[in-house]
Image 1 (tube, rainbow, N blue to C red):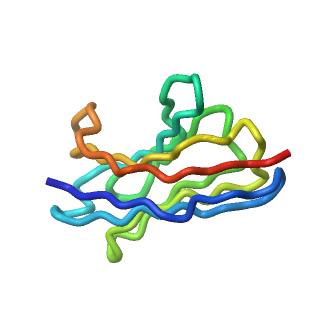
Image 2 (image 1 turned 180 degrees about the vertical axis):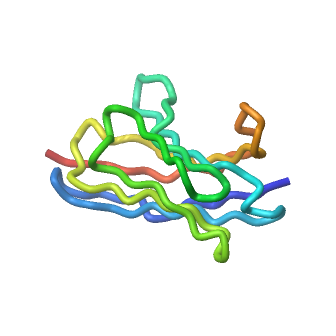
Length: 119
């Protein structure tokens, strides 16, 4: 089992920044690829960014490229999502998730953290 706890959400004005953190426990963190997802009201959940266990080859949704950065610190068992130049359409509940390296499905999820971007 992997336990995930997100933090760092909040209310911010458009153009502002937030950094989300996700602390993991329970298994060897570096064995898991990590993803940040979000679900906006009335919309499907979408993958925002993902990163391999080694920390290389991050990938991003087109809607956040150039504004969001995913990173991880395996010594601290934590993955981050730095969000800059936030837009009202970034408003959503953000979730971190873990999948064992080489697998496709994300099996472990955090409880989510709310991000609200005001215009």
